[in-house]
Length: 334
Image 1 (tube, rainbow, N blue to C red):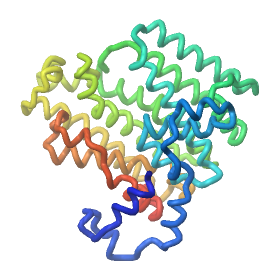
Image 2 (image 1 turned 120 degrees about the vertical axis):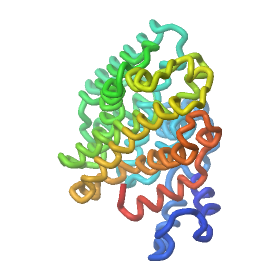
Image 3 (image 1 turned 90 degrees about the horizontal axis):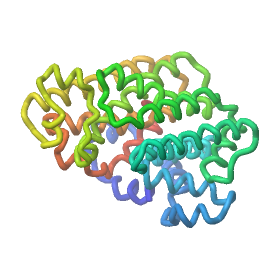
Image 4 (image 1 turned 180 degrees about the vertical axis):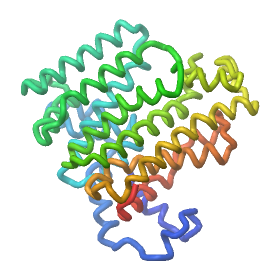
């Protein structure tokens, strides 16, 4: 699927990517390698069909789960080195399984039971006794292959568990702490998959994870509003005299847009800090940070609509994202 998008997107310089087309073009062999990436062909197979084939289909289950529930993560994982790709899919699939618990249960008690299952699963994985569940089996392989740190996996579960309460973040720091314990922890594990142990890479991962958490909160605002929920930091809302009801009514007044501007600015600041380590971060770590492409793209798009969080264009998929990710990967940048 991503290959077809790459081929259709490769056109004249009107793509709005200045400077990438006037210097030198990627070698033709790179495009051929992109078309051979696993998951690009035959991706029509359903998650249910993959899970029915037992342990042999566990890897396919993770790929399909990611393609359906975390498309940006799916595209980023496709561009990982071959020896790390299946583990990256497993790790992101684990994150998806946890992330969708909150919206898939009607009672907190059921959510707590699911989190308890994953806590026991991680314990069993480190005892070489994973349950016969596709994501668990693939995660077990990743743990064995890369000696992943159990503490980061548990931290993700613990933070997701605490977040089962339908409460808005009290302040931006609380949102950043949540992002650090979930998204940044995921990036620390991703660096381990890539074999990177570097302090500068860890610092960059911390800031990128916080930016990811903030942007995810912004992007989910229309969806949460449709379910009569608002999770935006209360301190910033109060600063501009905005109530939760303003978001539920899709109010587009300037003070509402000012709230979004302040929150988006914080995400942009974290991206800026992460990129300040660019020259010190090992090139080997760059695949872990490809998600910055999608983050920056969203922040630019929300700025173009004057921080109207409910603008329809923000809910549309970016058809040029596969191409942008591939170019960024080829240029060895984040």
